[in-house]
Image 1 (tube, rainbow, N blue to C red):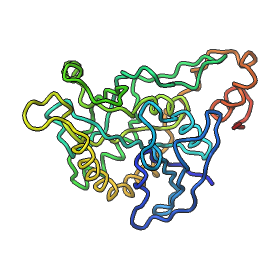
Image 2: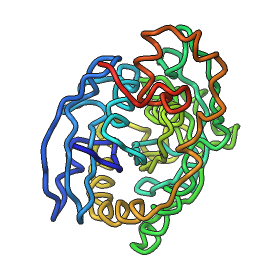
Image 3: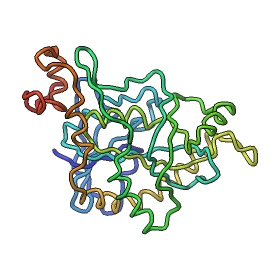
Length: 293
């Protein structure tokens, strides 16, 4: 089964009116199994792969999400574009709970996550100045505007390790950077997608004001979950149109991000490393697009 588009988010998002589930498949990868089985769905004539980031039932901490397996599995299906959905806290009055933000940049504050496919005998450095695909952001922005859903077309996302929420001192520090959002899931997903030459963008759904805002109630799990459910329902209604807008996109620089990134002479790359990364880079060293699990 092949799919050009994918959505990474909650397990209920693919249960859309008019959507038809084709199959659910497990995809073994060189980095183990993905977060869960991939649900292959037909939406308005487009085949879309859905993957619950934290597994069904929300089993994985943000730091435990097998992101390398997730991205490799989607690439093996032929995925060219990924829409990542992320619940976030707001660091500014401008972004209120219930708003959606099409992030244009990110700050990495994680410390324990495997954030690259490179290493073990292969060196590569992809460009990441603009971490989120501008084409997907524009496609999603058009739909959000047409539906008149409160949204922002830019914003910097600080990705923290978690799983605890921020201290007040951390929240104020992040605000001093002029960041807009705080979350736990955009990375390493965005970095790995860029290395895999897949277009990737995040729709960040604001659930709370983190803990910097003195007026009103500080962030709690109950508050986050309630607003998250409301945000998810709103997004479900718009997702078919966003997918349709993504479907019509032309080629993109994201899909050639590693063309000049690999520094290692191909003949010196260890056989096992070359074999597991041939899915991504085989076309650059003449090894074909084979794969291994």
